[in-house]
Image (cartoon, rainbow, N blue to C red; front, side, top):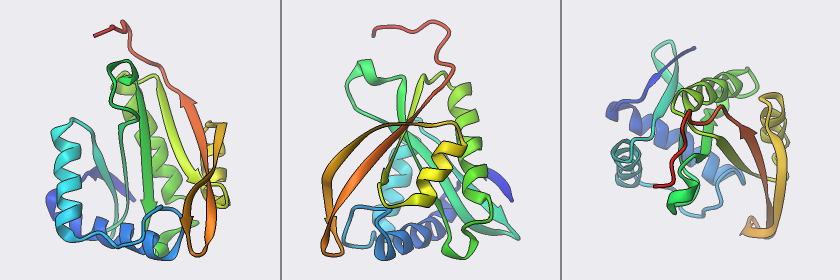
Length: 171
Protein backbone atom coordinates (compact mmCIF):
# COMPACT_ATOMS: atom_id res chain seq x y z
CA UNK A 1 0.00 0.00 0.00
CA UNK A 2 1.16 3.50 -0.85
CA UNK A 3 0.07 6.33 1.42
CA UNK A 4 -0.27 9.78 -0.12
CA UNK A 5 -2.14 13.03 0.32
CA UNK A 6 -5.72 12.77 -0.83
CA UNK A 7 -6.87 14.64 -3.89
CA UNK A 8 -10.35 15.88 -4.66
CA UNK A 9 -10.67 13.04 -7.15
CA UNK A 10 -10.34 10.58 -4.21
CA UNK A 11 -13.36 11.97 -2.39
CA UNK A 12 -15.92 9.72 -4.09
CA UNK A 13 -13.98 6.64 -2.96
CA UNK A 14 -13.58 8.11 0.55
CA UNK A 15 -17.36 8.62 0.58
CA UNK A 16 -17.96 4.97 -0.34
CA UNK A 17 -15.68 3.75 2.46
CA UNK A 18 -17.22 6.16 4.99
CA UNK A 19 -20.82 5.33 4.07
CA UNK A 20 -20.21 1.57 4.25
CA UNK A 21 -18.97 2.02 7.83
CA UNK A 22 -21.85 4.36 8.67
CA UNK A 23 -24.54 2.04 7.32
CA UNK A 24 -23.21 -1.27 8.62
CA UNK A 25 -21.43 -0.49 11.90
CA UNK A 26 -21.26 1.69 14.97
CA UNK A 27 -17.97 3.18 13.77
CA UNK A 28 -19.93 6.31 12.88
CA UNK A 29 -22.65 7.58 15.20
CA UNK A 30 -24.90 8.81 12.39
CA UNK A 31 -28.02 7.53 10.67
CA UNK A 32 -28.04 8.96 7.16
CA UNK A 33 -25.32 8.29 4.59
CA UNK A 34 -23.28 11.31 3.54
CA UNK A 35 -23.75 12.77 0.08
CA UNK A 36 -20.96 13.59 -2.33
CA UNK A 37 -21.54 17.26 -1.55
CA UNK A 38 -21.21 16.52 2.20
CA UNK A 39 -17.94 14.70 1.64
CA UNK A 40 -16.55 17.38 -0.67
CA UNK A 41 -17.43 20.03 1.94
CA UNK A 42 -15.70 17.89 4.61
CA UNK A 43 -12.61 17.51 2.42
CA UNK A 44 -12.34 21.22 1.61
CA UNK A 45 -12.92 22.18 5.24
CA UNK A 46 -10.07 19.88 6.35
CA UNK A 47 -7.72 21.37 3.76
CA UNK A 48 -8.81 24.97 4.50
CA UNK A 49 -8.17 24.40 8.21
CA UNK A 50 -4.69 23.03 7.47
CA UNK A 51 -5.45 19.45 8.44
CA UNK A 52 -4.29 16.54 6.30
CA UNK A 53 -6.27 13.83 4.57
CA UNK A 54 -4.26 10.81 3.47
CA UNK A 55 -5.31 7.83 1.41
CA UNK A 56 -3.94 4.33 1.26
CA UNK A 57 -3.76 3.11 -2.31
CA UNK A 58 -3.23 -0.41 -3.61
CA UNK A 59 -3.29 -1.22 -7.33
CA UNK A 60 -4.49 2.34 -8.00
CA UNK A 61 -7.56 1.84 -5.75
CA UNK A 62 -8.10 3.90 -2.59
CA UNK A 63 -8.58 1.26 0.10
CA UNK A 64 -8.55 3.48 3.17
CA UNK A 65 -8.07 6.97 4.47
CA UNK A 66 -6.80 8.75 7.55
CA UNK A 67 -7.11 12.27 8.85
CA UNK A 68 -7.02 14.33 11.98
CA UNK A 69 -8.52 17.59 13.03
CA UNK A 70 -9.30 19.81 15.94
CA UNK A 71 -10.28 18.06 19.17
CA UNK A 72 -12.00 21.20 20.50
CA UNK A 73 -12.13 24.73 19.10
CA UNK A 74 -10.88 26.79 22.04
CA UNK A 75 -7.29 28.00 21.61
CA UNK A 76 -5.77 26.10 24.54
CA UNK A 77 -6.68 22.82 22.79
CA UNK A 78 -4.62 23.68 19.71
CA UNK A 79 -2.00 21.01 20.43
CA UNK A 80 -4.60 18.22 20.74
CA UNK A 81 -6.10 16.51 17.70
CA UNK A 82 -8.66 13.79 17.11
CA UNK A 83 -8.06 11.26 14.37
CA UNK A 84 -10.14 9.09 12.05
CA UNK A 85 -9.02 6.03 10.12
CA UNK A 86 -11.31 4.02 7.85
CA UNK A 87 -10.49 1.02 5.68
CA UNK A 88 -12.64 -0.50 2.95
CA UNK A 89 -14.52 -3.57 4.17
CA UNK A 90 -12.76 -5.82 1.62
CA UNK A 91 -9.33 -4.78 2.94
CA UNK A 92 -9.80 -4.93 6.71
CA UNK A 93 -7.71 -7.13 9.02
CA UNK A 94 -4.69 -6.94 6.72
CA UNK A 95 -2.67 -4.28 8.57
CA UNK A 96 -3.76 -1.34 6.42
CA UNK A 97 -5.48 0.48 9.30
CA UNK A 98 -2.37 0.14 11.43
CA UNK A 99 -0.15 1.43 8.61
CA UNK A 100 -2.44 4.43 8.09
CA UNK A 101 -2.59 5.23 11.81
CA UNK A 102 1.19 4.94 12.25
CA UNK A 103 1.69 7.23 9.25
CA UNK A 104 -0.79 9.70 10.74
CA UNK A 105 1.02 9.63 14.10
CA UNK A 106 4.32 10.36 12.35
CA UNK A 107 2.81 13.34 10.53
CA UNK A 108 1.19 14.65 13.73
CA UNK A 109 4.55 14.45 15.50
CA UNK A 110 6.20 16.36 12.65
CA UNK A 111 3.49 19.03 12.96
CA UNK A 112 4.13 19.68 16.66
CA UNK A 113 0.99 18.25 18.23
CA UNK A 114 1.12 16.99 21.83
CA UNK A 115 -1.89 14.67 22.13
CA UNK A 116 -3.81 12.53 19.65
CA UNK A 117 -7.26 11.32 20.67
CA UNK A 118 -9.29 8.49 19.20
CA UNK A 119 -12.93 7.92 20.01
CA UNK A 120 -14.37 4.49 19.26
CA UNK A 121 -17.48 2.55 20.07
CA UNK A 122 -16.70 0.44 23.13
CA UNK A 123 -17.84 -2.72 21.30
CA UNK A 124 -15.43 -2.13 18.40
CA UNK A 125 -12.75 -4.52 19.62
CA UNK A 126 -10.73 -4.28 16.40
CA UNK A 127 -10.43 -0.50 16.78
CA UNK A 128 -9.54 -0.80 20.46
CA UNK A 129 -6.84 -3.35 19.66
CA UNK A 130 -5.49 -1.11 16.89
CA UNK A 131 -5.21 1.82 19.30
CA UNK A 132 -3.46 -0.27 21.93
CA UNK A 133 -1.02 -1.73 19.37
CA UNK A 134 -0.15 1.81 18.25
CA UNK A 135 0.67 2.94 21.79
CA UNK A 136 -2.59 4.63 22.80
CA UNK A 137 -3.89 4.29 26.34
CA UNK A 138 -7.48 4.16 27.52
CA UNK A 139 -8.53 7.54 28.86
CA UNK A 140 -12.26 7.26 29.57
CA UNK A 141 -15.76 6.33 28.54
CA UNK A 142 -18.93 8.25 27.86
CA UNK A 143 -21.77 5.84 28.56
CA UNK A 144 -24.90 6.07 26.42
CA UNK A 145 -23.25 8.61 24.14
CA UNK A 146 -25.16 7.44 21.09
CA UNK A 147 -28.17 5.41 20.05
CA UNK A 148 -28.07 3.28 16.92
CA UNK A 149 -29.37 -0.10 15.77
CA UNK A 150 -31.85 -0.14 18.66
CA UNK A 151 -29.32 0.13 21.47
CA UNK A 152 -27.37 2.63 23.52
CA UNK A 153 -23.71 2.98 22.61
CA UNK A 154 -20.76 3.76 24.82
CA UNK A 155 -17.96 5.91 23.40
CA UNK A 156 -14.45 4.96 24.57
CA UNK A 157 -11.58 7.40 24.31
CA UNK A 158 -7.94 6.52 23.76
CA UNK A 159 -5.05 8.95 23.70
CA UNK A 160 -1.46 9.01 22.60
CA UNK A 161 1.19 11.40 23.86
CA UNK A 162 3.09 12.94 20.97
CA UNK A 163 6.33 14.93 20.93
CA UNK A 164 4.58 18.28 21.14
CA UNK A 165 5.82 21.66 20.04
CA UNK A 166 9.34 22.81 20.80
CA UNK A 167 8.02 26.09 22.19
CA UNK A 168 4.31 25.98 23.03
CA UNK A 169 2.54 29.30 23.03
CA UNK A 170 -0.56 30.63 24.75
CA UNK A 171 -2.12 32.47 21.85
